[in-house]
Amino acid sequence: MRNIDQIEWRELLANDQNATIIDVRTPEEWSQGVLENAIMLDVLQLTPFEKEAKELTKEMNYYIYCRSGMRSAKACEILENIGVKNTFNLLGGMLDWNGNKIVPVS
Image (cartoon, rainbow, N blue to C red; front, side, top):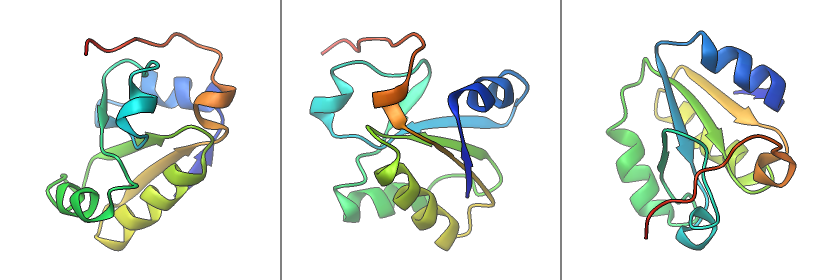
């Protein structure tokens, strides 16, 4: 796991053709706004999270965020334990995010 701030997050994503963004917040948090192109995998629902995580392509680069950066760090650990090679944890999560958010359609 590599901990990165939002400046590095933007720089890395801009040049990464092998990137997947994962939001590990709850559905309620997700409804408050997400980062563009993010998929939701609620890490608090551990069994479904692990099941879906095992289906991810291990060679992709996974950029993971949550509300504050704690759950995303845990998600990175879980992904690495199942063989994912590159995980990036957004420090400060959505609490510190100062960029655009997209409010998903409910």
